[in-house]
Amino acid sequence: MAELIAEKLEREKDEILNELDEVYRVIMNYARRYRLPKEVHIRFARKKVRDILYKIAREEGIQYRGKEIQVLKQVPRRVREQRMDYRFLATYLNKKKYSI
Image (tube, rainbow, N blue to C red; front, top):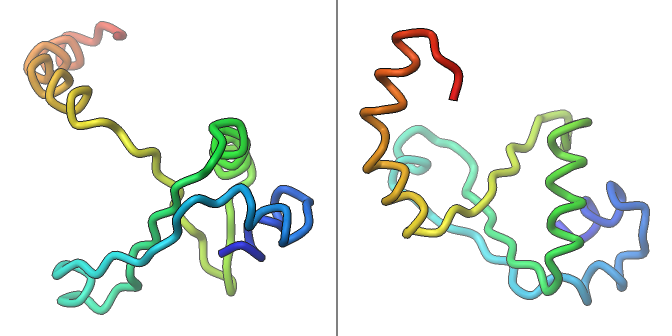
């Protein structure tokens, strides 16, 4: 992963290794059942590098061995719960064609 990130950010691999706090694979039953690749979770040491990577992934996309990689933000549990509380309202407004 460090090589891939270093290539996208146009930096040296050693420099990127200093920016990565934790990198680990997550085995999920869903992935096992449908023969999908394992998820890779990355925790960055600095917020700035993470935000730059999100921006690049959104604008250009990131590919590895010819396949597109999905880069997803980690949303805190508190925020997810708050969104769930207002999901009914968002659904109603979407049906009425109001923009949120």
